[in-house]
Length: 106
Image (cartoon, rainbow, N blue to C red; front, side, top):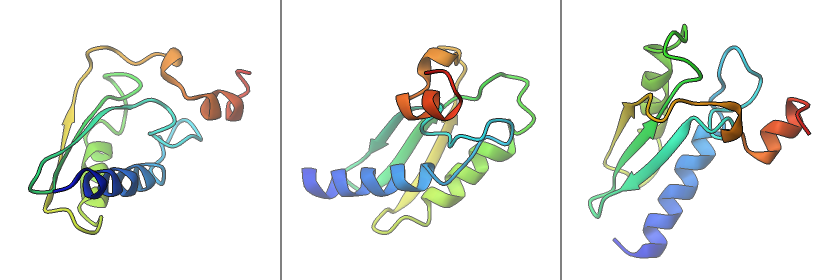
């Protein structure tokens, strides 16, 4: 897989992630800073390392599954895997500028 093919897949994955929202905060999970890493292998397998706003989040089971299902719909990938972590724990400093603006923090 070329660098440009890998980058195209990453852009498509990020586009999908921007359609998924935390049910308690009106901002998508990518801009919230819940996505820590996106890895793409030469075989077009995508792995996403993500967190939640808190370990007790009511969507702790359903949100990672939704992320996996939607990424699996991205063109030109073979598979998707989502790993949930709480290290480091999420805090408001991880919000993008766009998210901070939307939530009135700027």
